[in-house]
Image 1 (cartoon, rainbow, N blue to C red):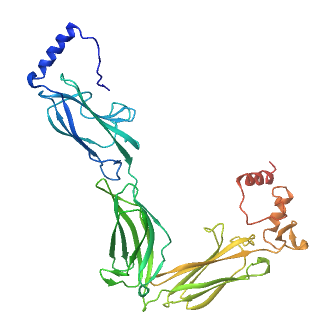
Image 2 (image 1 turned 30 degrees about the vertical axis):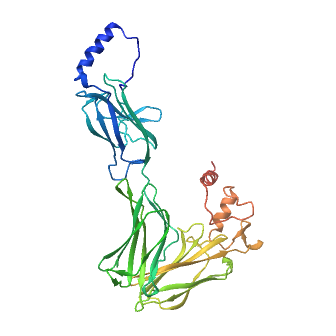
Length: 435
């Protein structure tokens, strides 16, 4: 990088001759005056770089007066706070310019002849530096600081989960959210409602201008194009278009689905979930899991399942019923997993959901406790307190204990439904094959 430096030395006769010749190069000598850099304007402060999907630039405008010469040498640079050159406009070193107004355009990247050329700068304070030195002294010099910030898009956050169901005569459907403008000066929050998903798609758009961070509520009146919507499944999307340095920057999106019903077509619901007895001892028989169905249109499918609250993705038992009618219903669970082994003590969940025509029935769930009674000594398998001699797994459990591959837990239990660690699996394998 070529940097301009003023060098002060004793003036010799030879140097005076050179200076005299150089003065004649800037004509006309009689009217020469000091060069001037004036009316500098930095278009953006702070200047936001990396605007998503946009080309953000800052415009720097200034007036240059050569001081009467035809042209004058001008150096134009972006510098950091330590005067390191970040970006040099034009050619390396001085560029000859006539008097007039000039505009510099910077996109927030490096251009200083290093490996960083083309990369974006980091957040911080930077300077515009303009310098011109003609034969008429003093030189013209200008510098001014401005802030550079990376663009942070507006962010929307739900303050509470919106309801899955909306009954149109009940009023408006409300979504509570918070808005952080971040780099945006203002934004337009937009809620779109699309549907019905099972019929001719339509869309309603609600737009609201937001000029500050805060908590807001956006409401949908249950209408599309002025008409109350038909029952069915609808989807919503909430987002904000922020304004950053004149560019439009989209926020994150909040999405969900809405089951809409009215007087003629009420939404089917399940309620009153229960587990009896609770706590439940699997060795004493089955547990009764109950629920009630209301608002069925006659084509209701009900789904239900039981899972351990610590592992919601693993169903221990599941049921599905087609054409179920309104009223109280129940299922029985014998307390066994998919391998027909009694489950271990812990917290379990009974979950019910379904669908009825174009409606999704919002899922409901209830937790209950499984606490197995200690197996009597004479009925224990391999002397484990939680495994009966009548268990289908008893012969295998007795064998792995006899060879020392599995010795159970310090509390005297075997915990047949518990997960194994990798080191435990390795030990069992080695012991089983006598290795």
